[in-house]
Image (cartoon, rainbow over all chains, first blue to last red; front, side, top):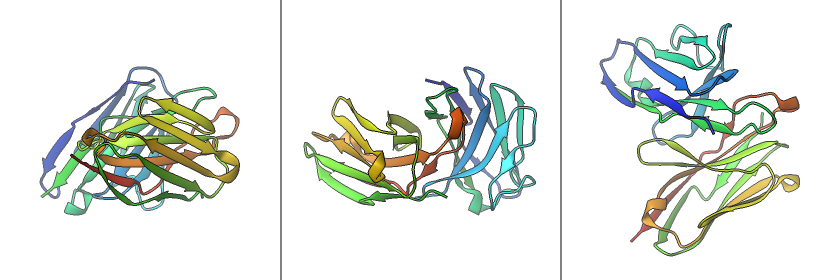
Length: 115
Length: 112
């Protein structure tokens, strides 16, 4: 399995500010994934982050709003910029094991409330 | 893309009862996972089961890939089983990696 440390676990932020979420993995991984889970909803992929290249964003998500860094093979950050109450969600990072078995593992999640 | 449907959307059980959760998917997959989301939002891996049957204590899962469905069985349910159960699938060719597609989940409430 993979051990993923995600922080902060929760935060309450003022609208118009930004929050950076960190995700640290205990082993090197090629791809890291960031998901958003709005209240009462399922998980939606925000972007895929590869080390050494620009993140790939899904439809409806843009780099200016959700900039991502991937400085090495064990670490990534997601920033939620210029926040509004609609950004209140759980944000999760995920990695997969390499090789044939592609089981995915998730960080503990960041519960964000924007007021 | 692949569509994932879970049923039922909500389930209320008395402690000690058994239940079956279903996940249907619209295309072939080589990754299927069941997760339990706890009240704090953390996703707990239950099963990695692209095919076949697995058991872990009171939980078991079966995936029939040719018929595009998976079942999660919970026996002798306990209040700690409450939460949302997600099925997620993916199709990754040649050992590649990619994101999972999630169903909308089954919200389970187990009453004492």
